[in-house]
Length: 150
Image (tube, rainbow, N blue to C red; front, top):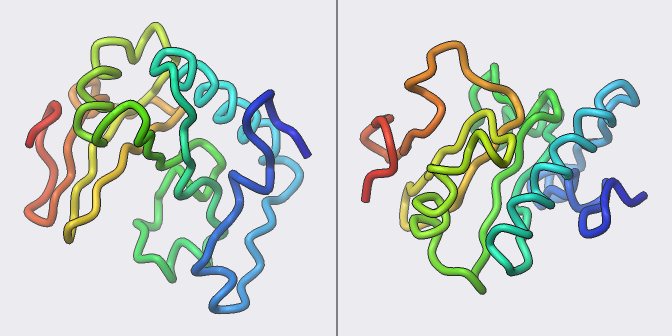
């Protein structure tokens, strides 16, 4: 099922962890409109970057979220979030730095540059956090920091 021109429901629910553990990662029907909003945000990001965006994690059922070590309140479990890379544009840090000044324009509620254990990606959510300072942050093994940090 296509959510938008470039993003499908299958793409936003794919999970190698779910497959390997035999977990169902089908979103309840009431979350599909949120996944459409997330896909629409990803379309705006894709157009801004000018290259394809590869979703590495979208919707996660509670069981899948626990299996990957996600926080219990993760926006992924509500269909609000996606993690992605765009190698045709650059590194996740370069992507995050490019998108940070555009969060309002692109309808990004929260932008997180995550780099942990030698892996890096960009997390975006349609949901805006309660604290405005948490809209653009970096998360590493050492914790969270405001803004995009190396």
